[in-house]
Length: 416
Image 1 (cartoon, rainbow, N blue to C red):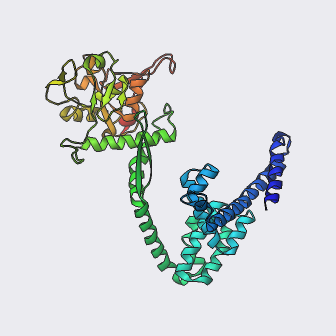
Image 2: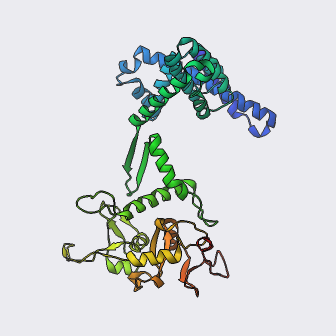
Image 3: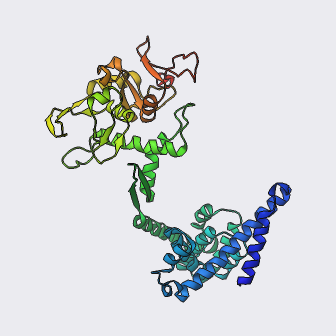
């Protein structure tokens, strides 16, 4: 075996050294197809080797706690990838010969094999061996036309083709099993980075996934032609907007005796001069721009600190833009006032046109509604905002965008 693999490795190395630019388009496509088939065949060989090593107990004999841990070190894999390799090797070993032959022949890929093996296991449990044998041929045929995701979707109705008499009952049982697996596997992992950012990872069950999509999908569309955010950045901002809305309701459970809230500490002089950073109560610091943006629509708790930072006097909390003033702002702007944005009022913050730290008053004439994205955009960009002659906000674009700097208004909310 090792001699054949060394010959194959040498042949692949020779192909890599061939100049692709000198090959005709027809041959390039043929080479791509051949490479993909070879990749699947090698995957079949690799899985058979993993299965044999696992069965022999090679990993534990060499001091590792499991085959997955041994593979992680030997092949420099992530632990998750190593575990999936062992699991797939076992699944392929237990799969019908037709599935193994399809992978070895390059007709299907590894992810399709996983789907086929799991589907056949379900068919066998629901309808017996004969139906499972029929399902192999059907699924392998589908795998030549559809990717793993669509193959799994089609596989949920495989019994309609191989055992229609039990299809409905089995489909309901499979759905219940799927729901049970989803409930078992649901989790969210929050990992704090060294710079204060968080890394989110996890799996949502079907119901929670539907709720999340319903909440953030309307907020992930571009807000206009000037919105240059990537889809991932728009999803990030949408999740942040949903969290802000939840905090704004005041209906979240108390945390340590206080309502759920984001706490930022900063000095007044630095805030007024747009130079002062702020400290979150959980440790990380914020830039002066972020502090001023949060201060636009926040509860301000003035405090006097001594030279060593001890609190000497703490005043009463006051809200900047709330109550009747916010309602009047909603009636006037009807949503985010930035040109082209359709975000409704509940997704918006109250922004001081002239910041209160700069002496701006808290009044309808000095306030404008902005969604989270355009609030950040205004604080970090070169746009200016003012009230026009008609009493509605108008935005002056930067000179690099419009040399004439013609004021722009939000026509969307006026139409509605």
